Length: 207
Length: 207
Image (cartoon, rainbow over all chains, first blue to last red):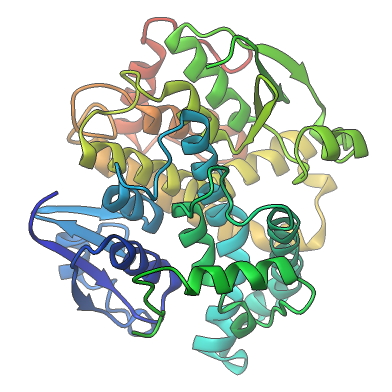
């Protein structure tokens, strides 16, 4: 990896936090550049030209190259470390949970948190309001699947250690209440959250 | 990898096709088990218990282990092959496009195709109809980003060769018209589709 690693981020974003948590657990230093996503900071011509044509954060800058997509940035930082399993099936199974996170977890739980906690319910469009029930159900189903999976193991992927799958899923799960989701019925998730917080070099989301 | 590789799939699904295309390009044999997703075949108690508690396909069965999530299954098959770059940044950049595919491409383009081509527009719920415009815009934006990226290169990831990023994005892009998307304005995508079709051992979606 190059010496210069810059995280283009908004501290309110769980997707950005995943990358900071991965770096912290591995003892990797990151320079941070801040943007306000509620203020259009990532849709300026300068951002679109220099950082990401897709107008999104996080983007991890490694030297003069730019890497969007939070889970891809985590993989870049952790490739070859203990956070990525050596076993071929376990490595793919880690990615399985990371794709699940982006497909079934984030679009429901992170979006609900963004709407209720960041934008505020009073500022939502009629179309956003119409989608809330579907997102509540989708997020609830994702949490139920996670809880059942964790009821018989400590970490998402077999092997006895936390992997990037745990980091990716931790980011928005531990603040799910900010999106109106309760973890009261999900004791296995709550115990896993405590295991995450107890990891050496763990760093909190607002740090 | 174990000798026994079974793909639990529905041939109408582009997500399932990704895995078959990866296997074909690598010369890996797959046994196929068929399910009809419009008929609830993946929500039966037997499927939920034995194949995937999430009730979805594709699932790649490797010996006695089950791997959901199409892009994770592709990674499992291709890990260590020429379809996954050796270079650390390129490997992460490949995953970047695969996460983009699942987050911004598939939920728009594949869902529109499922609604219009598989279910039929007359059978959609009012809520699905209300989401169509947002999905059209999101799919169009994803295609525009891909086209601009491909305007200066042959494959999604630097290095001169196709990777899993191309396979993941090819699956629903080459049938985007079935979801009401036109590729007329996207010449770079059309040329890339022809390069994909010309790859040795390429297999079509309905094969």
